[in-house]
Image (tube, rainbow, N blue to C red):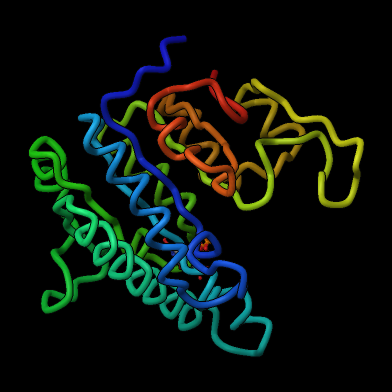
Length: 238
Ligand code: UDP
């Protein structure tokens, strides 16, 4: 497979922005990530970012505390907007123009999500950051990444993970003998119930033939390597 990408969706979990504290937004960590995004954009690769919100709020955690799931999910979507604005600030400080587009309209804060506009921004070299997930409860930002990648015709989704190099046959944090896969099919991921992304997101990628690269964001330079098509981590495709 040709792993030279023209347009990618970079999926950052909320956790990736939290740094060593494990929650909230750590400006130093955000800056380190942003510098790599800028390096990718300066290579002429079109980048869209989908950012999660787990460093601030997850819908399921609210549900566990007795909240209505839908309200808790909307809070999660709003959390992703805070992360999107933090990334926007840091990427622009590092010299690349960005646009935040949200799936829930908040016009004083960001543009609404408009597919054709997002593509146009990327063609002009702007990094587009998608906030507020899909705008719907009961979904995840992994599914958002799959949906947006299909909509904007991205060549791949680059899934940044904290603390693991790719997809393993068992949890490497628990089992020291866990083996990492370098290549998997979508069906493998679904049948073996591997924790690449949730099943809705994986199915969407499979149906639309969007490859996923799972890689470790903690390794220096890995965002650039993944976006440049270097063979790191685990590739999931058909
Ligand atoms: N969320 C949602 N719909 C979406 C995307 C996200 O309801 O389309 C909510 C959901 O509650 C989720 C939270 O936003 O728990 C934060 O997103 P996610 O857990 O995917 O973030 P990550 O784990 O990547 O930090």
